[in-house]
Image (cartoon, rainbow, N blue to C red; front, side, top):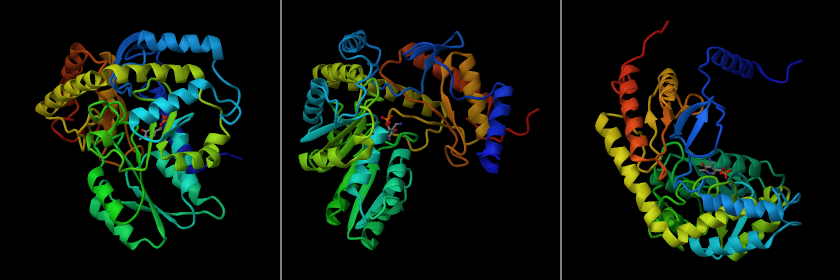
Length: 408
Ligand code: PMP
C-alpha cells in the first residue's frame, strides 16, 4: 500500500531526478544567519530574504535574545493561556501603539494568526471575499473555517486587485455579512493592494476588511508601520495581521484590532489557544527592533526605498520584466521553468542566491526568480547581482523572451 497518490509519485520522481542531476533548488542549507552566508562552504549573498530592514542580525538584537534565553530559555512549554510573560504583554502594548490600534495579540506565527482570526470571525452568515492571489494562510484559514461544523462560511474570490470584481461579489453575495481579506503587498508579485478603493467599497457595502500586511510592515509608510500609514488609512481598517518573520527579525504573528475583536479572538482562536507561546528570546528580538523603528524608522525605511529604487531603475533599464511589482519585492519574470532554474543555478555559482519560483508554485508562464531588495544589501551586492543577472539574462533568453529550445 502506498500512502500517496499517482500524481504525488510523479512529483517525487521529478524531485529525485532533479537532486540526482544536482539541479534541485530548494531546501538549500545556509551555514550562518544573515544576508551574507555560505552554502556548501561557498559564500553567497541572499537576494530572496525577507529581512527587509537588515536588522535581524544586529548585535543588539542578538544580545537581547541571549539575555532572554538566560532568563526564560527557548520555550515556555505551554500555550499563552498558561504561560504569558510580562515581556509578551509589554510588547503587545507597544506594538498596538506603534501601529495605531487599540489592541495587539502575539501569535506564534503569522500563519496561525490568520487562521485563528478567520475561524473566529467567519460563520454561517458570512461570505469570505478573497483576492485570487491570496497567500496560503488566507486560503487555509478560509478552508478551515468552511469546514467547522455549524459555522461554514461561503468563500468567494475576486480578480486580483480588481475593485470592480470585488464590488460585484459584495453586491451579489447571498450571505448577510461579508468579510474581505487582502494583503498590503503581495508576497510573490510585489504589488500593493488597491487599498484605498477597497476600503471605500467595503464601507459602502458594510463589509469589514482585514489586511495582511506581512510585507508592508517595516517597508511602507514614513515610519514603516505599513500600507495604512502610507495610504493615509489609519483608523479605517478594523483588523491588520502581520508577522515577525520579515522586518521584525524572527518568527511570530501580530494581530491588531479593537479591544473587542482581539479579546474575542484571544478566547476563540484554536491556533492561539492550542499552540505553544511565542518564545521570549524572539519577543526580545522583536522588541529591540521596535526600539530601532521608534528611534530611527523613517531613516531606515528611506534607505530601503533608495536601494529599491536603484535596483528597479537598473533592472528595468536592462530590459527585465518585473511583472506587477511596485515595491522592494521585484520578481524577475522568466516565464519558463527551465529559464528560472538555470538562472538560479548560474547565479548561485557566482555567489548570488535567488530562489526560483516555478510551476505549480505559480501558473505556467509566470515562473520567476524571487528578488527582494533589502536595506542590508550594499551597493556592491546590488551591482554584482545586476551584472550577473544581465549576463545570464541574455544567455538564457530571459531578456529576449525567445524560446530556450531543446537542451542536451
Ligand atoms: N502572510 C503573508 C502575505 C506572508 O507572506 C507570510 C509568510 N510568508 C505569512 C502571512 C505568514 O507569516 P509567518 O511566516 O509569520 O507564518
